[in-house]
Length: 258
Image (cartoon, rainbow, N blue to C red; front, side, top):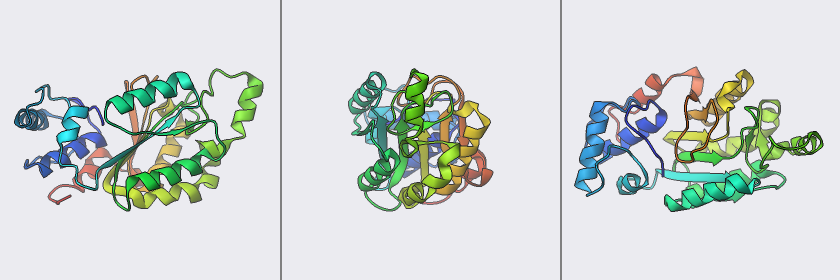
């Protein structure tokens, strides 16, 4: 349930390359959707009588040899119905079964428990994707809803519910809860949040690095306004464990059977 196009450079592409290699290819896992990866996708689509557009979307994804360790878990913050309702519908149309959270206390704790239950055990989670608001680049919402178009008074009230969003100012208090997810991720696991402008602020980028080190997986967010659900719109910021890069992250998966 993802959308990956030729030309993309990302941990998602590394995951696609791993799955194509499971299907019998011998691609270099480098996270770059170049000509060889494109040719492998088209050949895979042809062999399964799919549209040969070189785009890895929901139809192609369903035919990949996913095994039992390539689970995708979606969490949608439905506290803003105008956003959450559309996201849930799109994800279900794509074959997903999103976890719906909204306007509740301790939303982060609720999310962690639900994801652990859904992922099916240690090392199973290939992608954890949260769809919510970015609060102009300040918060990763989990169950808060719209925190941009509120009155100043209401905003102050929502800000006290810091167990329902993740930000730099409260990460220390949330680490004991969030760290429970670390064992869920597969070796090639990825985390993404679809909130607007999260990659645009220095302190929020610090937060992404903190989460990447906590979970030992790449954490990706958009830099500008985000509209799409299955992909990022525009520039993307990704933090890698240990302040690494796409190149050294992907290199871990070369020549191994995953």
